[in-house]
Amino acid sequence: MDQELVIIKKIKKANIYRFDVIDYSRSTLLFSQESLKNNTKSLKKAIYKLFSDFGIPANICVCNVPIPLYIQEILNKYNVKIVLPSTTIKKTKYKLKNNLVLYKKMNIDKRDFYSRVVRRIIDDNNIVQFNNIRYKLLTKDKLPKKTRVILYYNEYKNDIFVIHNKQKYLLSPYKEVTSKKGLTKY
Image (cartoon, rainbow, N blue to C red; front, side):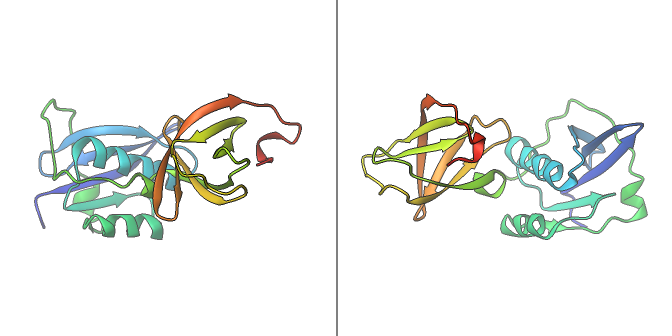
């Protein structure tokens, strides 16, 4: 087995759920990530944090939770091998150490980890509405009204961008609105 192995272990104590992310060769806890009821979403957040903060390891082993197919596809995209959990790996003892562990750095495509929703351009000034806030696309090009675009956002909804025809557009808040129909109007 390659020395670069990261174990992502689901831990349940009382009513608290979390993922511990461990460097196997150094027996070091890299970080803990709170887990929601939705294991898939929490696992995706843990992998994104691992990739962005520590780099991309050669191997990953996920214990106590199945790996969804689309997360397997993300790992394959970044050339990360999935190691099946064995009893040796599951019983790994680890400590929180101050050693800085870094793996190979690579550009991470946020689209793999961000949530997305389809929206339409609602007027001729390149305006898109999301969560009762209208955003202006930062571009000189005019997209036609009612053009469908894919809006990507992180869990805090503070990093938002749009993809249209394989082109990325940044957004700027335009104005806050209220709607009788709620958040689903546009």
